[in-house]
Image (cartoon, rainbow, N blue to C red):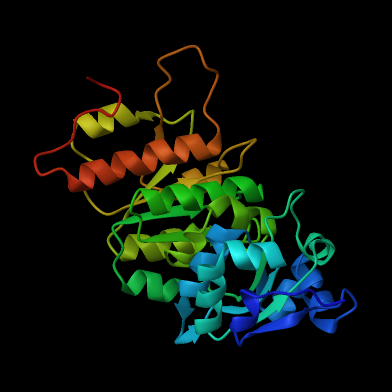
Amino acid sequence: MSRALPKVKKMASVSPELISPRSSRVAAARRLGKRNFRGKERLFLAEGPQAVREAAAHRSAGAATLVELFATVDAAERYADIVGAARDAGARVHLASEDVIADISTTVTPQGLVGVCRFLDTPFEEILAARPRLVAVLAHVRDPGNAGTVLRCADAAGAEAVVLTDASVDLYNPKAVRASVGSLFHLPVAVGVPVGQAVTGLRDAGVRLLAADGAGDRDLDDELDKGTMGGPTAWVFGNEAWGLPEETRALTDAVVRVPIHGKAESLNLATAAAVCLYASARAQRAAGGCRSVTGN
């Protein structure tokens, strides 16, 4: 049943009729919650105003990333600027009931906007050609929330790229996309790269490889104080539960631990990644070296 929409009707790209729950478009979007369908269609879901806003502004290989948007009437009015940006990007915009949004969404409390986006991963060779100075490599990271949070940390620290190895979680898992809070659309990400290829390629590009591991034989504070952190660096982060395998650590130039000055047993993956990435970012930006990030 249609509903009077005085504000939304003015947008030519938005249908004044609520899309049917039985629509093929709704069914196609719902299927993107499963990895095999995402891979087949090379499409994924971006949920919530922040992710949809970033998706609408993003282009990959000359094409708009956002191809379709489902919005409740209330969300379309509340986020009229985002709906307008989606329209300007050429996305098809559908008004949907809250039940339809809940059916498509993978969150417990949907925010009324769900976008369908094209895959946007970058070939690893392009990342190497750009000569990056700071890279996060996710090797054996299986938790999508952690993967998305590390991507967000890398973005915030000014990293030029993120690499997910073939042993890591799907970049387009809805939980990973949500955890990135839009950062997925900000920096190049390569996916499915074998660990050995990632390490060899980055080293050949002049990047120093540092494995982050709580049992590392080098201390992050000491490395900062010695002034060894100012050059191009790639941090390799491992599995949440068991860290990096010995064979992966052996591929890197050094294994570095974040010092624990209190009584905590350890840091979780995302927190450790944030400390390591910001330490490198500060060292790279410091004109005359870098003080310890934990010192006064």
